[in-house]
Image (cartoon, rainbow, N blue to C red; front, side, top):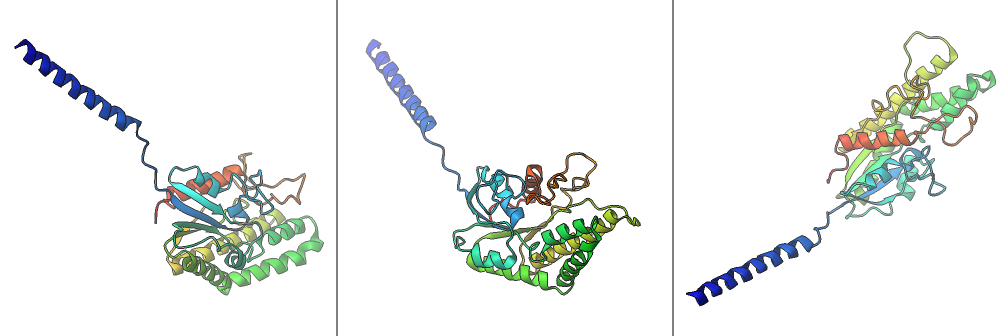
Length: 280
């Protein structure tokens, strides 16, 4: 009986050691790698991150761009942020699609503002508020942009860009974003030069966003509107913490009329809230 009990205890001990070894082995095994979504960002200065600095290159790509913020996610692999300041939808088509392919799973695009010359409009029209001789330049730039929106040309340009992206990355989820108001809209009925300018800037921003949204609907891709996220935080914000840059001491700064780091964080958060970064 003593020998039998000893054998039983020895067998139980060995079984226990084997179970422990298996548990330790499982604990020591590396966690399975997350299958990250292959992501490429395209577009203009608002996609590059201009206004948030520090900059990585002459395209004003910033480590604070919304694409770079997405790259910190454990589910996203940012293959590249190909966006570059000053680019139009045609530029996106001709210079930024080369890295797209069948393995690309997500593409975001912010583009269309430069088709209208929006930066030039704002610069000329802000100048015209203080220098009447600049008024003709403001009027022409604004009129040309309004005509491009009203005729459907801008929407057509954005459609062509999206279709080119879809052809280059046929398996990708495509998301296009809009633009924020640079100045918070003001109450109607005002006649001072600043308010008159803001009315016009608001109308142009609405036309720009409407054209992009229409193009997204036509091509069956997602459109993300960021105007609500920036509400109350434009250049003329009373919060003393605007998310759009405008340096009165340096009115020629290339960062003016672009979001700061908080603004790009709002872009990222808005995209995240609508599951833009989910797998296709």
